[in-house]
Amino acid sequence: MSFIKSLAGATCAFALLSGVAAAEPAIIFDLGGKFDKSFNEAAFNGATRWAEETGGTFKELEMQDEAQREQALRRLAEAGANPVVMTGFAFGDVLNKVAPDFPDTKFAIIDMVVDQPNVKSVVFNEHEGSYLVGMMAGLATKTGTVGFIGGMDIPLIRKFGCGYAQGVLAAKPDAKIVLNMTGTTPAAWNDPVKGAELAKGQKAQGADVIYAAAGGTGVGVLQAAADEGILSIGVDSNQNYMHPGKVLTSMLKRVDNAVYEAFKEGEALTPGINVMGLANDGVGYAMDENNAPLVTPEMQAAVDAAAEKIKSGELVVHDYMSDNTCPAATF
Image (cartoon, rainbow, N blue to C red; front, side):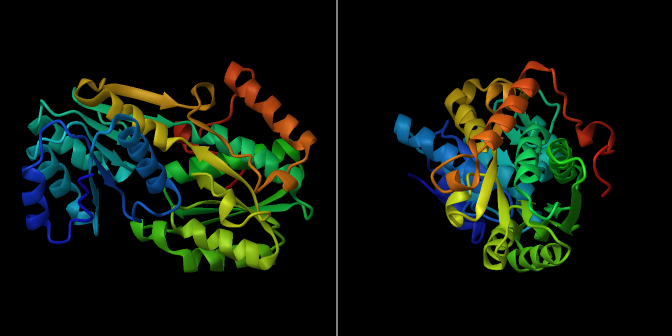
């Protein structure tokens, strides 16, 4: 498989890429790296699944800093990669600028809408999956206080937190919810030390279940929660295995499916907006042998019942992105 590990030594790396046959798909990971055990890793798993099933190969890039976004997109398109998939809202402005220069190249972006004729925009109903794990937290808490730790303070992450808060209060109306964000720059996605500090601070305020929606920073949240004897909730990928018996569940954001489908479509990638939610298995929550002892049949039944109501439209979870307000929490 032809992998380019990073943009360090970019001239040499892209010289190698230019010799690869056209129409090989490519993926660019956001800051935090492909092995963040969360968002980027889910994307990598989707690309890998496509390669294993088809025998195909793909290009991949891990950026070292913000300045490399446009360079990465242009060089991959020039090298004949098609489609080019990128993970993260931060590619939005750059893609809007680059896509018109390569009308024969298809692009797919996750977590942002880019209105160009050769771009597929994949967005998720994270608030729906977060509502379900919020219910789980509300049903599991013994102190009546639960926590949420986000990564970079942006509307998208507040969307996670707002959905979570709604689910918590649906299960336990008198619950207290402690919310923190890690930072205001992209560095907030990869600061496990800060994540651990925030988790310990939330425990000091009484939280005994903490949901981390913070990329690589969440690794520190989950570790600290396990060390402190409280429960955590993972995000994006199934993180239950990281601390068996200590992670209540994980909110699954099927970025892997989004990347897999984009690679599968190949040069025939369909432009436009694709919304992935509970109804089409775009989000959900994780159950396996690692968290089974923590979740009673009654808890699972209650959460599954809510999921069915969301799928049918009977229950509508407020989307923070719709008006930047949250009826269940104050950020």
